[in-house]
Image (cartoon, rainbow, N blue to C red; front, side, top):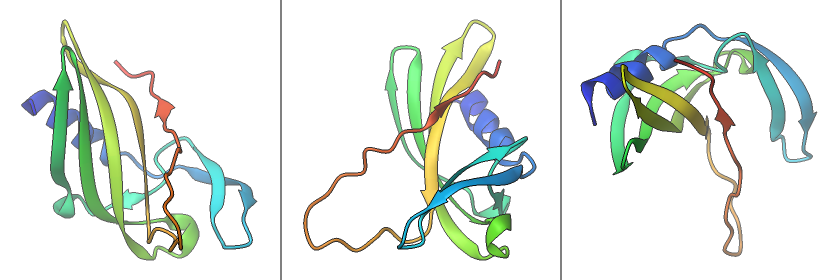
Length: 124
C-alpha cells in the first residue's frame, strides 16, 4: 500500500458523521438507509487497521477494520470492516468506491453469500 493511499483512507474515515435517513427496516432489525452530508459512523482513529490490499495495474482494494460508533444507535461501540477501492492518478490517488458495515453477521443454517454493493465516490 502506498503512503498516499493510506493517508487518503485515513482522511476519508475521519470525516464528520452525516445525518441518517432511514429507508426501511427488516423484521430482524436490519436497517437500510442513507447518510446525508458525511459518513455514517464515528471511528476511533487509534484502532484503524489495514489488513489486506490487492493491486491490479492502477487500481487497488484495501480492507480496513476499526472500532467506532453509529450515532443513530445511541453511540454503541462496534467493530467495522470496510473495503476501499483506490485508483492511482497522475497527481496521486483517489477513492473510487467503498463498502462495509458493522456488527455481527446473521447466523445462517445454510451456506450464503452477501451480494451487497457499495457506492462510487466522486473525489479527486
